View (cartoon, rainbow, N blue to C red):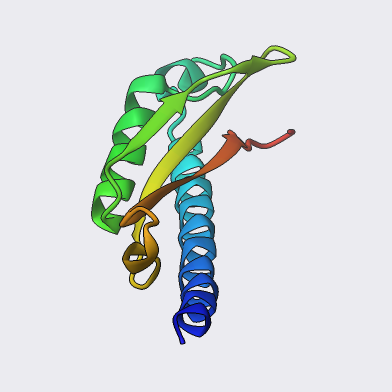
Length: 123
C-alpha cells in the first residue's frame, strides 16, 4: 500500500512541479515582453537608436510580476551583436502535497527564463 501511495505521490507532485516550471517560464516570457516594451523615449524622439530603457524596464518587470504574485526574479540586460536585450529569470516554489510524507522535501523551487528584444519599425 505504501508503494502504491508513493507512486501516486510521484505522479501527482511530479505533474505539479512540471506545471510550476511551465508557470515560471510563462511568467518570465511575459515579464520580458513587458520590459522589452520600455524603450528610451528621449533617445528615440531625437532620432537615435531605439533601445530598452533599463530603469523603466526593471520597473515594468517588477510591477508585472508583483501583480502575478511572483516576487523572486532577476533582470539582466545582455548586449548581443550591439543590441541590448532583456533577460528575466523567475523563481517559483511548488509545495509538495504527497511526497513530503515519504521523506522528500516539503517544497521544491523551479525557475524559468526568457529573453526579449525591443521590436521597432525596420527591425
